[in-house]
Image (cartoon, rainbow, N blue to C red):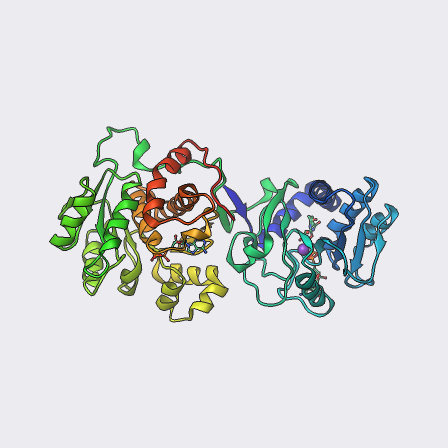
Length: 472
Ligand SMILES: NC(=O)C1=CN([C@@H]2O[C@H](COP(=O)(O)OP(=O)(O)OC[C@H]3O[C@@H](n4cnc5c(N)ncnc54)[C@H](OP(=O)(O)O)[C@@H]3O)[C@@H](O)[C@H]2O)[C@@H](O)CC1
Ligand SMILES: Nc1ncnc2c1ncn2[C@@H]1O[C@H](COP(=O)(O)OP(=O)(O)O)[C@@H](O)[C@H]1O
Ligand SMILES: [K+]
């Protein structure tokens, strides 16, 4: 797992490390890591301009500029306020040959060291002018720690901010690098280890890396005897006269997961059609270890939700079922809205959710005592308490009808197999995104095609070897 910590937790960890090593060591580690990456990414002969703010973020970049100067590269510096600049950093950069310039205009390579974790979101004055210049001239940009102007803890973009192709961040990721609209401002994220690890608290946000395998606790790797019931049975209440396809797609997603059996609950006619396409499915009542209710549902969905909740097993509620929520859940629950559905649940506008997805998903998780999986380009899985999972797999081609139904079935299958809503939702989102890429790298996919690609992706995940999970 790759972790992100809040500013307060980063500050506490930095203090803990600095108590052992002294503050200088931290900044020197950050600066050297930054210089190495700049050296690697800048074309030979390119002269970058560094936008230098008043704090340590500027200090990191000034010491990095000194390293680059010592290695023979020209570096220009633009100071936000010449009276407020990291003095030793500036002295080192100038001594190594860097020059101060009045304006960044004309530079094709930019280093953003205006503000780091000390930033108040939104740029003003000369810093805001730099942001406008950046949009006009579009230089290749590397951000130091975070893109300046973003809301570091919340991932929102409340005002002017800079954009980055690459963000080099120190010690741990910051929430804005993984979630919300801010994550799209950060580009590729590269982590420089400065030794904070032992001092860091529980992360605020985490995300899978290619080496991550399945979490402990699913029924497939239990020690006991293995048979279809021990792997978990998933009940599916999805589809309706008008949306029969949802029933097929939820079943296809569920069959791509680890559950031992799927029971379909729905009209006899729809049940026959589902079994015709998927003969492994059992249509009709019986015991289940988890329910998926809602995709493609109709007026009868409220009753299906009520019935599922009386069984006291974990539930996944999607689409229509999100309009029939109990006041609080007394079973493990995974709610899977897209932004429009979450807006409706909370009585806010879709724009409100798009502007602050994490804030709204957290509000819903705490309001209902459920885990909320908010679908979108960067799907979030937010439990009522504890770290959020940010999904980084997928492709924009997944924005096509029915892929959400496949995800619901897949996540339901992992729930039935014994994972918590957080684990089931985040594993399913990770595999679903990777399957979207695998189904047709770089091009369009259908929801059925995504479901068909999930089993092979799952095999790689189970082996701890799932690469190429996104095409953005
Ligand atoms: N501590 C360490 O040794 C290490 C730290 N590290 C590095 O330090 C960075 C954090 O440094 P930092 O705490 O100095 O904060 P930073 O973000 O540079 O700037 C704060 C200054 O900006 C100002 N300001 C803020 N927002 C503003 C706005 N919107 N508009 C205008 N002004 C604004 C604010 O002004 P004030 O609030 O005082 O008015 C304050 O003066 C961190 O991201 C990492 O890069 C690494 O080297 C590891 C070791
Ligand atoms: N721009 C995007 N980039 C990547 N994935 C996306 C994007 N938009 C949507 N998705 C994914 O596509 C799926 C769409 O689900 P949903 O909105 O419920 O569609 P449907 O109801 O048609 O099945 C979700 O898994 C979501 O995360
Ligand atoms: K910055």
